[in-house]
Length: 191
Image (cartoon, rainbow, N blue to C red):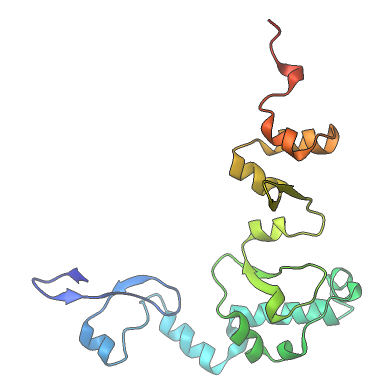
């Protein structure tokens, strides 16, 4: 609650469409109003009710469907031709939207297991970084009982990725040695 205009308290709430924080009178909220911010979210929510094809999630669904079924689509060779399909339930946009929900800003649909198709248990909204780490050609490394991609390990351990990549891929070092050796012996100052 934030005090404004003397002693009145207004609850801090968020817009149901975009999540923007805002303050609304308790009477407004009790009447079922004030759920949208002033950035056009009310109109956006109204257009979604009547025309789902205007939703960003609809475009994602349509593109997903095309790359898996239309052999004239540029991405078909990487999806439909590989046997990647859309589950029966997601033939309907309403079912797809009900399962994945609103698309968070800066994300796109991602398959957790790249060898499986688009289905509720295998899909998520993912950031570009998450998607880059989930590509089929990304090498996963097991270290300390966990499996992550090289970039993720380097970020977590505070290491320079290009140096670790060189040690593992070019020089053939085991990941444990590459992660724990702080400086390459070739560059040590001779005493």
